[in-house]
Image (tube, rainbow, N blue to C red; front, side, top):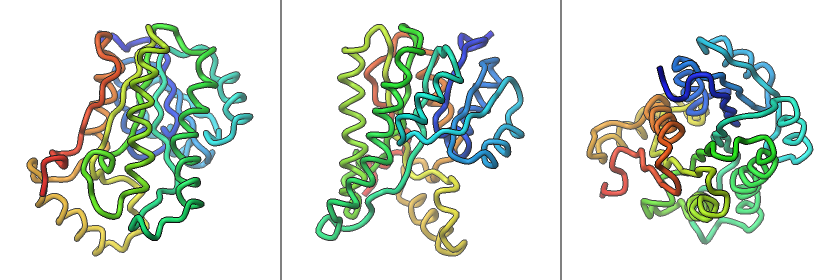
Length: 241
């Protein structure tokens, strides 16, 4: 039996992409999975794909009152996964406005910040938190200054929390290019070309899947001797040229 069986795990951003893949994996291991997202319709669709104990909650992780209501409804949890995201500040550094960067910070770093603050009274003291950052903060790619600022802040913040909140464990997964609904707005041909080009530059020869990231999340939730860690799941993007 998995060490995570019978434990209650809340995934903010669990209604699609990497968060949903993690929810499916955890439910198969016997955990009770709670997923939170902004859309009831999307939550319902996600829950229909999870085999096991799962429930959904509508919440906006950028709004403190919505988060307070979420944790009052969800009750006591053993682990928290922060997988939600929002608008990203893509583009050359010279053209990214302060307003665009503030929006990106509000939509991820500050959303995670508020989520964890709201969770603390309901989170098992020796449980764990896993946050998703992104490979942009590790690969020095032109055009990702905004992304690297937001995700790099999450990485450093998590390491400070691993000490300050101990024995609560705090870890980060840094995904590379992963085929998620975030790219569905692209034309099919453009998306296929972008993924093919990226795959050719990576040591593993392919881009990622949500299940690749889910495996890393499950590992960090279950390994009680790991905290303050950054786990790169990027196909070797840090080494690609």
